[in-house]
Length: 264
Ligand code: 48F
Image (cartoon, rainbow, N blue to C red; front, side, top):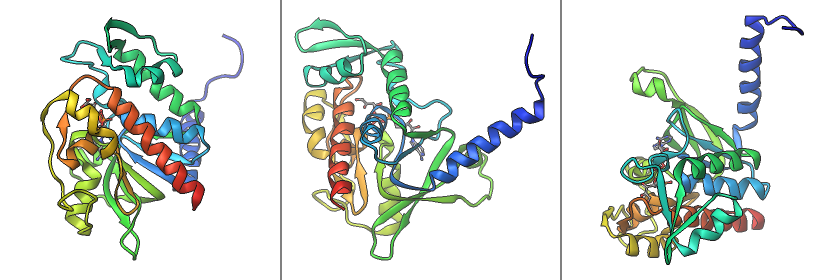
């Protein structure tokens, strides 16, 4: 082997300094997305390539949420006509199964979404869990409170830190982690029929995929909701391993946010 001799301490310094420099530049962002599933990553990609300073916090080691396992652990997903152009645009292969039903490899789809978001300039932090929101004095969500996931899992008494954001997106899927926190701690009224969480309904992909775009809204001041969380908070149906709605929802939130940020 030729070249510079490897110094183990230099490896440590390289990682720690690079990470800190990056994280410090991400402590004030335009959009903070909680959850790196398909909906959150789609929103992140569209925001990033439009030049919006965007950060994603994912509590798991691997970003990707519920897409890796396709359906039933079989690593294929189904995409309907409405979302097929997104996969074409991202150069993800699809196969026509029957009219209106395309299959795509879940590993190819998710790895492409992660890569495209990163290449668009989005910062993705894994192993970091959302714990709370920052709330401005006029009761608007203005950032996220985060901690290392292993600290959370270990239930260690270690205080979290805060990252400021003009807007936050709840992309945490069925769990609606950000919305739950806003309800229990901030007492904010949600943009739902009751002003509260309506609750997810049982499987009906046709209904669920039809309403998800309408459900992708600014659910509380400063807080957007995308993907499965959007249907869950609005009292709409779950839809299983057909993923078009997740991507379309992420894209819609990104567009709405770009309009808001452009106008502010
Ligand atoms: O669950 P997830 O994939 O949400 P999605 O993008 O897509 C839903 C589909 O996977 C599927 C479906 C399709 O029809 O219904 O369920 O709406 O991704 C949510 C991500 O959020 C992360 C979680 O680990 C997952 O990767 N997450 C959840 N809570 C937190 C979090 C938290 N407190 N902090 C950080 N990340």
